[in-house]
Length: 328
Image (cartoon, rainbow, N blue to C red; front, side, top):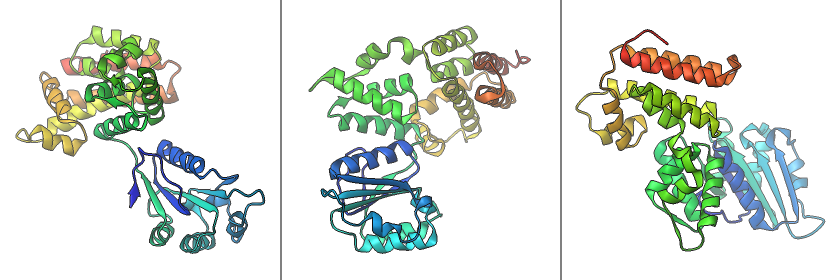
C-alpha cells in the first residue's frame, strides 16, 4: 500500500519512491535516511550503477550501525542492474536500507512492478497540479507541523506564496512555528506575515485584467513585482486566467459549476467567478488575449531584457481584448 507523503515515512529494508514531484521525492528520501540512523550512506544515480556493484554497496558496513543505499531515477537502470535490484528486493540484506526513486512512467516499468511484487514499501509522490491538490498539500503540511489551519488560511497562503511546493512547505513550517502550540492559523495570521503580498499576486492581477480594470491591474502588477513575486508566476497566473475564460466559455451553459470544476481542474467557486468575468467579452477576445499571454510568456522566459514591461504590455492587451479594441 502506498504511503502518504504528508507523514514521515518509516524505515523498511526496501523502499521505492514513485512519482515526479521532486520536492516530495527529495523529502521522502531525506526522511527515510534520517529515520534509519545509519552510519554509512551511499547516494548515486541509477545510470551510473554498473552490473555487480549493488552487491558491494549492500555489503555490511565497515563502521557498523547499518547503511543506506539510495538509487535515484531507477527507471534509468541498465537491464542487468534492474534485474539485480528486483532480485535484491525479494531478499534484502540485513542492516541495509535500499531506497529507490522511480518516475513511475512506462520506462523501467518491469523493475517497478517487480520491486512492488517483492513487498517493498511504496511511497507515492505524484505531481501536484490542481488547485484542490495544492490546497490539500497545504493542509497536510500544517498537520505535519502539528498545527491546525482553516481553509481560508490555506487559500490565503496559496495566494501569497504561489504554487511552488518547497516555498509552500517552508511557509507552513514557519507559520506553524511562530503561531505556537495549540494556536490556530487563520487568514488573519497569514495576512500579518505576508502583509500586502496576498493582495498583489499574479492571480489578483489576472482577475483584474480579465475583468477590464486596467489601472488597478497595473497597480497590483507593479506592487507584486516590487514585493518579489516572480514574473514567471505572474505570467502563469495570467495564462491560467485567460485559459479558464476559454474553457468555461466553451462549456455547455447547463453544466453546473461542480461538474465543470472537475473537468477543468478548478474549484467550483472559481468557475462561478469566471462565468461572471466572461460577461462583456467579445467572441474573438479570448483568442486575442491568449496570443498576448503566449508572447509575454516567451519574453519573460528569456526573449526580452524587461520582464516587467512584457507583463505590463500583456495586461494592457488583455484588457484591450475584452473591450474589443486594438492591442495596446
